[in-house]
Length: 139
Image 1 (cartoon, rainbow, N blue to C red):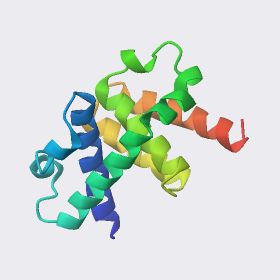
Image 2 (image 1 turned 90 degrees about the vertical axis):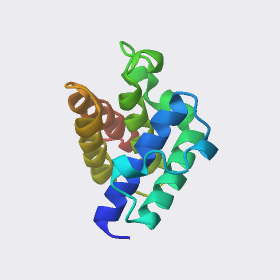
Image 3 (image 1 turned 60 degrees about the horizontal axis):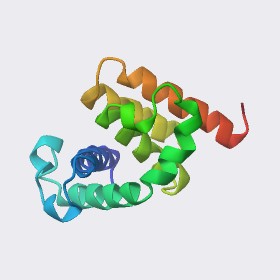
């Protein structure tokens, strides 16, 4: 899969996770975000995004716990929906998806820039950078 298709898949995954976080079932996501994500012309990216969202969502509690002590001022329930799902997606990709940490963090910051608030990219970058340094033993 090309890099552009992987970026589209992540965009789809984030949008699906956003909807799941708002109570939508994964079965009802049959394309509700495809047009917005730019994926209607790339069914493989859309399917990859759905699969990525399902796996990251399944392991969301693990990601939330992994980051909990790094965001004591902003626990999961206080984080904007986009930010918490960008973090969950990135942690999943680094821990279980085989995505190199630098790429996962860079892509998470780009998603936060595109879909989040003004402070989202800096927040996501700081949290993931601290988590990676602690996780990798370089802190």
